[in-house]
Image (cartoon, rainbow, N blue to C red):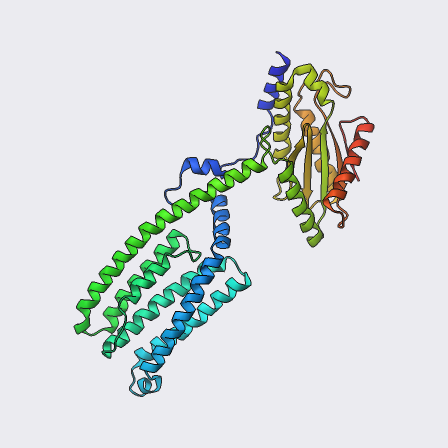
Length: 403
């Protein structure tokens, strides 16, 4: 077996990289006709859309607030609650109470959007506000009809259209809200109206269900496009941040992640290790086996390292050439030692032949690891880890030094 074949065989037998069923390219190839990604990717998409649609939701909510205040003023000018109460006409009182409840929920939604609090509540509050607006408008319209007062039959259609605006709802949530409004509008009419108004009410109810269908078709096409663009943007970002040879994060991505991890560790007072890993005698390896074998060895090594980093904030990235960066987050000193020893042994266990090495007959690595002191900048901890890497090399390589 040639040296190149031995490297290929070692790469094939390396521990598999973590599953990537939720990868952006894979999801796009798989399709999403039901407007649903795999679980992890769906959560990411919804977080992204809540952030993206916060401002449009706020604009819609403020517009709805202005219109709603006008409706409340018109109600007060046209129907006197005290007179209605004395006449035991409780439907008007129910309509008035619903308007004030809707106003309170609408103000809560605006408060959440302005304060950027409870991002998960954006779509839930939007859903509740829309259903309340639709229900209250239906009750009020029926009250006005029974009293032969002018009312806006088209208000229900406008509300159905508003449901499909970008207010933080997914397609399925929008359809559910629109259908609920249409059903409640139909039921309330049959319950509240007298026989003289039923025929017209049936006609309007049928048109509202048709409006739901038309709005749903447009919403489906819009969200499908949004999801496709989301995947494309993420794919482009990944390509910009990934190392073309090994598939792990490149230097730019690693340093951005490391800076974020340092800030978080400082804020949470968590343990963090920043490490630099260097392949021993890699120039001699390329000279002995060729650059193609060198590329295969680096890929195999990257997969082995990535497979052993299980926690969300842990990361391995390629800094350049045969040098890799490591972040171990939330670790104590003893845990860090065990993990670093495991990583060094993982590379040795690949058993990639290296006859030209002065250290071992197979490929090995040296690691310099700095334990974050809670105050260092990225540049400072990088410099310290680099110095510890040279200590490992001076001690004979194929080892780590933690300081």
